[in-house]
Length: 105
Image (cartoon, rainbow, N blue to C red; front, side, top):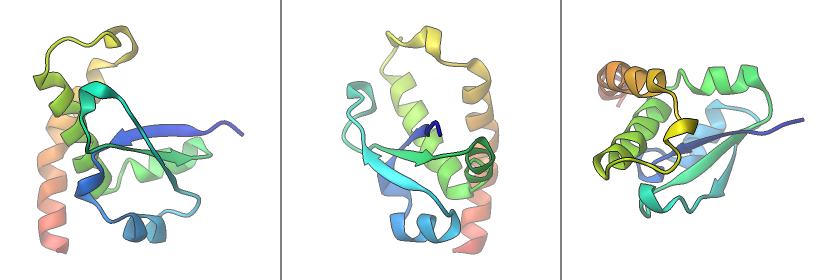
């Protein structure tokens, strides 16, 4: 099975809480220099699971935070590997995720 990685800011969620909500989720350290020290890779083993985890408000906020932090630093050497719709979605849904998290918290 192929792992599906997702980079996110690690300070914006509890690993324990996230694992309790998403079976099969694992975490690995990541060292993408442009993302800074606050980053982690979330790994899942199925496309269905990654689609599920991408609906989680904490994951949306953590991914949004990392994407925006990288964007603020300027152009990336990996620009050809990124999709503009991911950034659009992060900007659009980040506010919705923040509202959901605030209501839940």
